[in-house]
Length: 114
Image (cartoon, rainbow, N blue to C red; front, side, top):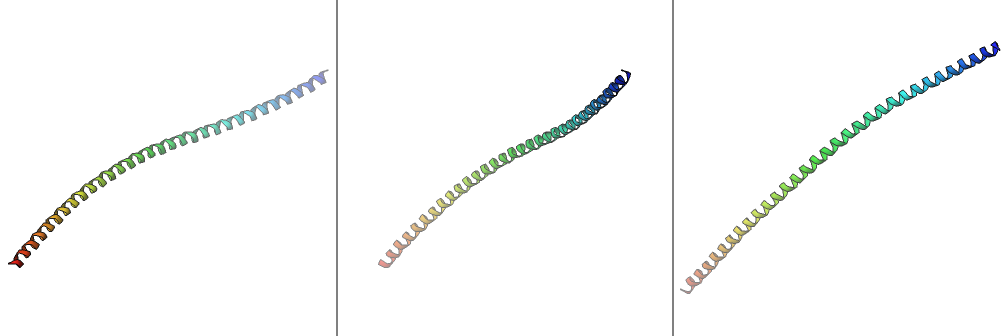
């Protein structure tokens, strides 16, 4: 009976050692998983920061694009107005030139009749 109890105690000690080893291995695995989880969380946080930075930069570029487009529209409008002014001046000069030419032709005709 004593030998059986000693053998049984040895088996229990062996099982206890196996349980302790299993527990230690599980604790180590959990610790590794925890470390990997922390690292992944850091990566996700960094990705979010980068994404926010990209979104902010995109917003800024869109605002700049709108400003450039507005400036180009204003510039084009100014060019069209100036072109219209120049065309009006040119038309005035052409009309003046035509009027002068007609007057000279009339004057020549009068002089030829005399």
